[in-house]
Image 1 (tube, rainbow, N blue to C red):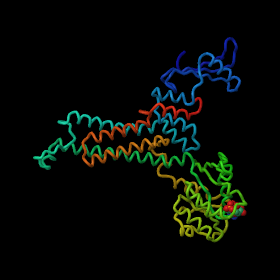
Image 2: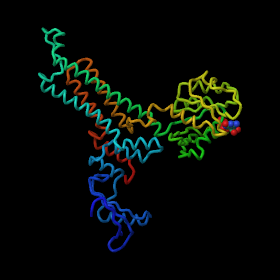
Image 3: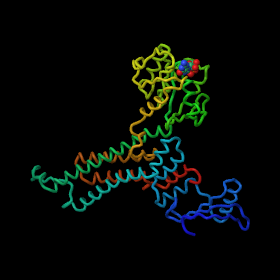
Image 4: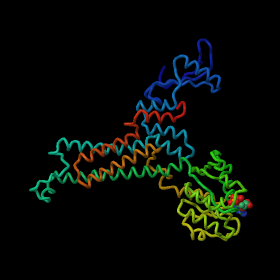
Length: 433
Ligand code: GDP
C-alpha cells in the first residue's frame, strides 16, 4: 500500500470479525518515530479495543514502553532531546503559558539557540587546532624574544592578528554567556509560571481572606485540584487566573473559623515569608490600621508581596500610603464582595514575575533542571576561557574549556548523554507517547 494513506476495512482474528476500523499506513522516515508505522483506528470501546490489541499482540507485536515512540524518534535522530522532553511538557501543561512555552521548544527553539552557541565554539576550536598544528602561520601567541621590544612585536602583522583574534573570541564568549544567562533567567521565572506560583493569603481576622479565597477559587477561575496534604492542615488549591497558575497553600487555616487569632496573624506570616513565592496581604480598608497589620507587613516586607486594600465598596480609612510606611509593595484596591479589582491583581502578579518570560519573546525557554544544570556548567567553562584569555595563557588552555562548554551544551540536545540518563528521561513519559 502507498505510504500516508488511510484504509477502511475490518479487523479479523482468524475468520472472526472483531471490529470495523481505519488503518493508517505511514512509511519512514516521515513518521513520528521515523520508522514504518501502522495505526489502527478502531471504535474506542474497551471490548473492541482489547480484542484488537489481543489479536495484534498474538501476531507478534508487543506493547510499547512508556515514552518509547518519542524515544525512538530521538534515537533515530528525528528530534533532539530538548524536543523529546518538550513532548512530555506539552502533555503535562497545566496552563496556557506552560503549553505555549513547551510547544515552542517542541518546534526547536532550544535546539536552535544551543546549536548556535555550539557552532560558534566549534569554529573557534577549529581555529585554535589549526594554530596548534601550524603555529608558524596561524599562531595566536606573541612569542617574546628577549631581543624584541614590545612595540616591534606588536607591530608585526601576525601578532596584531593574534590580538584581534583574542578579542573576537572574547566577544563571542561574552555574547554566548549573555544568551545563557537569559535562558536561565527565563527558566527560573518560567518555572513558577508553569508549575504554579506558591501563594499565601495573609491578613488579620475579618480582613476578607476567606472571601478573597472564595473569589479566586470561584467557578469562573476553576479550581483545578484540591490536594489534601500529608498533614491535616495543609490544603492546596490550584487556581488558574488568566494564564497564570496560583497554588494557594495553607488555606485550611483561612477557612477554619475556629482558628486562633495568633496563628492567622504573625505566625503564619513568618512561615509564609519563608516558603511562598508570593504573598497576598489583605487589609480591611474600612477599619484603621492596627498592630496586627503592622506586624504582618514587617514580617513580609522583603518578599514578593502584593497588598490588597479590601472592601473598597465601603468608605476607606486606609490608604496605599499607610501600607508603604511599612513595606514597599504594589497596592491594589479590591472588593471581594463586588469581585472588583481582580484584573489589576492579575496584572500586578504578571508584572511581579515577569522579566520578559511572559511576553513570549523570541528567546527560548529551557524546560527543566537537567537542561539548566548543563547551562550552568557551560557558563562556568566559558568564564574559564575568559580568564585564560585575560591571563594570556597558551591556546591549549582555552581549547580544553571550550571543549567542555561544547560537551555540556551537547547534553541538552542529547549528545554525549549516557544511556541511563536517556532511559530515566523516557521512563517519565506516559504509555503510548
Ligand atoms: P477573614 O477572617 O479574613 O477570612 O475575613 P472574611 O472573608 O471571613 O470576611 C470578614 C467579613 O467581611 C465577612 O462578613 C465578609 O462578608 C466581609 N467582607 C469580605 N470582603 C468584603 C468586601 O469586599 N466588602 C464588604 N463590604 N465586606 C466584605
